[in-house]
Amino acid sequence: MAIERTFSIIKPDAVAKNHIGAIYNRFETAGLQIVAAKMLHLTKEQAEGFYAEHSERGFFGDLVAFMTSGPIMVQVLEGENAVLAHREILGATNPAQAAPGTIRADFAESIDENAAHGSDAVESAAREIAYFFSAEELCPRTR
Ligand code: IDP
Image 1 (cartoon, rainbow, N blue to C red):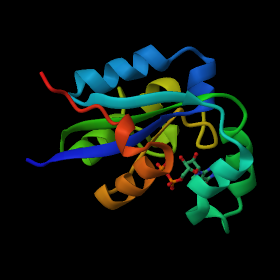
Image 2 (image 1 turned 90 degrees about the vertical axis):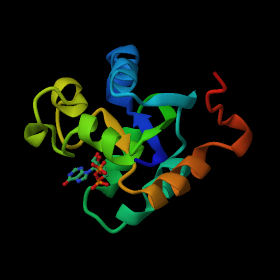
Image 3 (image 1 turned 180 degrees about the vertical axis):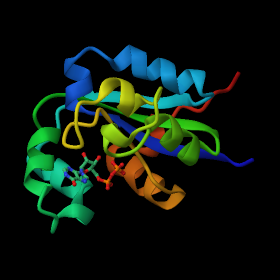
Image 4 (image 1 turned 180 degrees about the horizontal axis):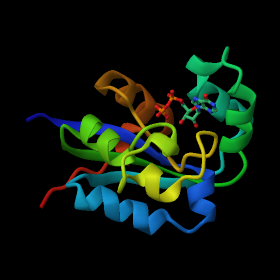
């Protein structure tokens, strides 16, 4: 088992509905430690940059509008196989297809507003963490 870091966003819909604590509880129950966290209200430029790989997709404009519609929480999660462990508790992109008991099944309304983000690979996690956090902001456990 490898100790990994992954990147998480609690998106504007879930923050607006006061689900931050409930979602943090899912992370900790799954054995993932929150080693960095902050609240942000993304600019259009920040959201476009974060989702640049989707810039040619038809939903890109709606995605950027949604991600800038209110504050978000961004987190770095650390633990054994953290990337996959986080994706498993997150559930499928479309909450209608997300397994029962997953974050998206329980807190998301639609594929457009799907409550949370999780990195899909160790490489993308490193890029996404660096997009929002400096090395000094990461606080791995010392006890
Ligand atoms: P992921 O968030 O599960 O990794 P991605 O395919 O990377 O899924 O898509 C990024 C985000 O773009 C999704 O979380 C969702 O908010 C949005 N998205 C993806 N596909 C669609 C779609 O077909 N319609 C509307 N929004 C979409």
